[in-house]
Length: 254
Image 1 (cartoon, helix red, strand yellow):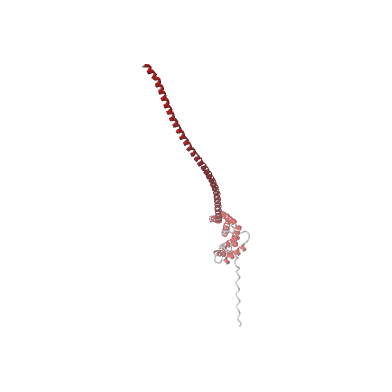
Image 2: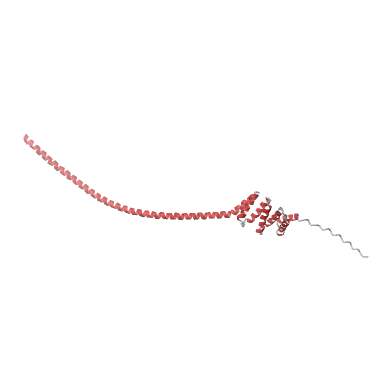
């Protein structure tokens, strides 16, 4: 019995080993199948990935072309903007020059009145030196200006009050010589005559001539009344002729 049992042990071990080997083979076959399935899946995924990569490459190429187009358009836009900027700068500069020219024209138009008014205000404030300088400045710049007549007259007035007789006489003479129809002619002639009387040389005869012209040509003016007073003072008193002797009475014949 014991010998029989001992014989069965190796047989059992051999049978067990065969069964184990067969199971291992089945397990390995299953693993191989799994590997094949995984490999097939990977190949499929790889193919899909290759397609996607190809699509991506195409998209990248399209994007690259689009970027080139965008870059070209941006370049054109940049050039256009530069042209517009240059044109705008030219227009702005042109407008600036126009405004500057207009401002200069306005200042030029206002300058005569400003020079005259500044000088006249100085005259009203008894600043006769500044007034005479201002009127001379106006006349130097605008000898034929609209305010030249007044400038000559008030220049004469300022110089007269500063007792600069010779210069005052010239200023008054310019009024009635250059502006013979001016309303200031009577006053200018009167003041010219009075200025002549202030000169060191004897100008009495010429002064009387101008005084008489005021009375003759502007008889109803205030200047004519003043001129008459001066004429009376300057004219020598009329010589009184002796009264004629009474005639001898006629003798009656007897």
